[in-house]
Image (cartoon, rainbow, N blue to C red; front, top):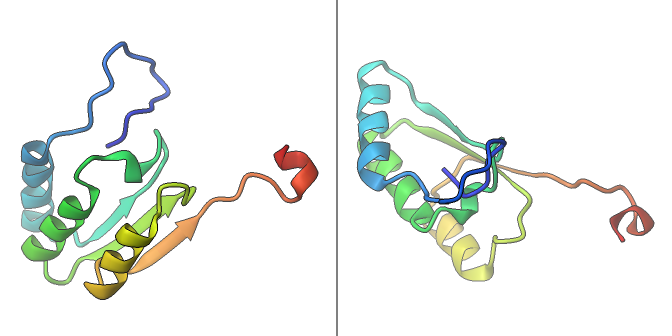
Length: 105
């Protein structure tokens, strides 16, 4: 979903909406409704169509549960307001890698 990966590549392309729609259609057929957009291989908010992706899931699977795992660096006001206003996600997990300012620096 994002640009970073455990496996380094020269080209960093986000997964296409067309492929995402196929995955969502398969999930619907299999009665899968929980989507965990995790940063296991990078930051999910890096996807250029992140909001559109969530809207597609919500439109295709009305009982979907969407969970986002992010470091929140890219969670700017515009994105946050749209997520809240349109009730696009059900759970937001923010990772914090440091417990104090000295470790952060």
